[in-house]
Image (cartoon, rainbow, N blue to C red):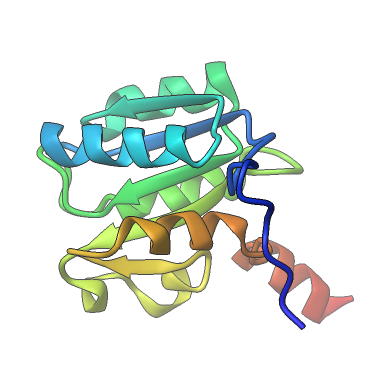
Length: 144
């Protein structure tokens, strides 16, 4: 039986920080509003990968909502590879893209892939789901 949250409790209450890497300012603002309405305490929206790396290190987000086609890089999914090796508990990844087939399959396994345009409720649900193990963790598990 699926439990539902009480009407007065946001879907993502208790979620401290989410980094949104999105170069479209209107979409970035819409995602920020969706996450705040869902109960995320702090949403950081950045338009390119370069500033995102510094924010990940300084802010230690719980999750990253990652557009894979950005103005400074056409392989935004590379950020997902990097964060999987930065520490024992890397941020969870939710990919968003108009071209899901452009994400290499082994990278797409790192988190949910939302095809643009998507319903904001899909993003909230993706952040509520259990975290996928990183590729490195899966390899270590297979070798043990």
